[in-house]
Amino acid sequence: MAVTLNQIALFTDLDEAEIKRLEEIVREDMVLGDYRIFRDGDPSDAFYVIKSGSVKIVKEAAGHPQKVLAYLREGDFFGEMGVMKDSPRSASAYTMERSCLWKIRKPAFLAFLEANPIIAMKVRSAMVRRYSDNVFTISKK
Image 1 (cartoon, rainbow, N blue to C red):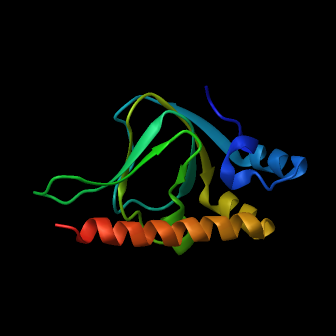
Image 2: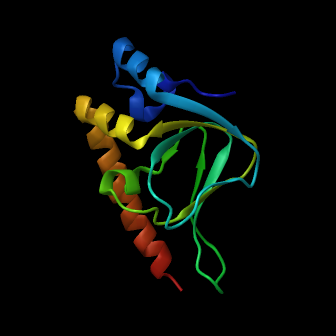
């Protein structure tokens, strides 16, 4: 069963009007399994929330096996690091099964965060935690 925007932990503090605004900037994409959403080094042009399905975030390097940084499922979000830091993608993202993703373009997402500082704080907190986890995962041999 797919989640709705107001069921996503990141958005639980939003009132009805804010959820309505969020719904206006979200685009829903249905994608097949093993679909590459973005690649390490791509421009960071959007933020994603998993409505249904699952995604894996991986670090890829030529001649080396993939390092899985995270397995994400329904209700999780990703793509915030590059968008918030205004930098290229630092990892690749693939669906693990048929998935429905909510996509929010970078300018709309940044404007939404500016209007909702509590959400911005939650995203920054997750970003710091993930960055720390990724550094540990990548540095492990």
